[in-house]
Structure formats: C-alpha cells, structure tokens
Image 1 (cartoon, helix red, strand yellow):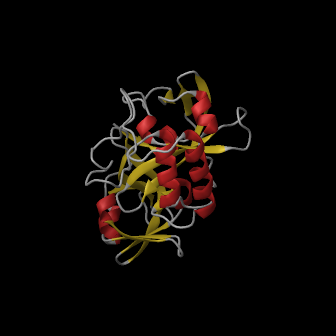
Image 2 (cartoon, rainbow, N blue to C red):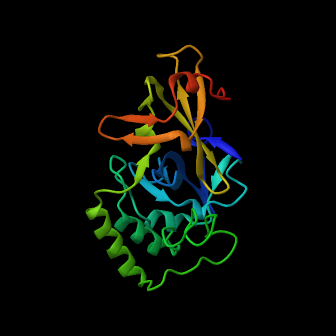
Length: 237
C-alpha cells in the first residue's frame, strides 16, 4: 500500500515489542535506488534530544498502516542503538556498523532492493547473521567509529529534499511536496510536486523514473518531462 511520508508516516508513533520509543521524524532514502533505508525516530521524552536510526527490516510487515509503526525490537535495543546527526548523510561505514549491530544482512550485497531479497528481512523469524559478526562490545566500538567517519553517501533526508525546486526540461514547474512510499518493500514510487507557484493546478504526482538528476548544491530536482507534461500529470490524492 502507498503511504505519503508527510501525511501518513511523519509523526506516527513507533512501538517496540515492550513499549513506545518515539515517533517518525524523517526517513533516509537511497537516491540511486529510490528506497527508504532508515526511519529516523525522535525518541521524545523517553530519550530527550536523541534521534535513532531504525531499519525497515525491523518493521513488522502489514502493520505500517496501523495507528503506529510496530518494530520487532525491544526498547533496550533501540536505546543502545546508533544515534544520528540528522543534518548529515549517512556513510556506508555507518551503514555497515548499523547492520552489524542489529544483525541484518547488507542490503548492497545483491541485485534486489534489499540485497539478496526483494523485501526487507529481520521480522517474522530469526535474523540472518552478518558474516564475520563481532561481539557486542566490538560492534558498539565499530559503530562509534563509523559515526565519526560519516561524510558522504547516497542516503538523503526526505525532510531535506522536501521543498527542492522541480525543473522540467523547459523551466521550473514546482517544488517537492511529498514522497509516496510502498510500505511492502519501502520503495519510493512517486513524488508529489506542488505546482501552484508556477502553474495552476495544485499538487501532481510524477514517477521517480521521471527524475533525471538531483542537484544537492542547487537544491533542485531535474525532471525529463516538459512543464506541460508535468502539469497534466495525475493529481495527488
């Protein structure tokens, strides 16, 4: 089922097996594969001032459309997990440490959205161990080192990209308003574009395949379509 980030996921409560751990504040998505790799969870009053990364592999299938996002983790696991500087992308080193800490396979080791499988694993049964997994203390040490080394990656914040200008092949046409996410495999299927400041018509949706390039320095998303084609795109629901 498709769910919009801003209207359906952002602010939704996150519940571990033994209690509530916070709410969804952001998602990090892969700008090459157009798939959500992490939920950024604001731990609120539970751990004031802290945000943690939670992989979709921990989300209980079929319950992302419930009144909360249910994760197959206990509160202590989340408490001891990696924090995140939400003003930065997440590096591959940080991703490796995150996977080792939670025991998830690497999503980049295979041809599918989640590595060797199409859907995120880690729920509904035992989690596949990461080859060469280290003891818990060593995992935490690796994680801390990776946090310090975080510099560049293909992971981007949905909150960051919201508001980026959308340039058609013949001129500006709007700005990014939202992301439509398929919560079965957490792929981003469509972008919601607000055209009201450029063209009459309000919000329309364009498939991610129509995106040619994202210019992070210019805060601009370039589309292959013309202004007229985007204007005639399906209206956002």
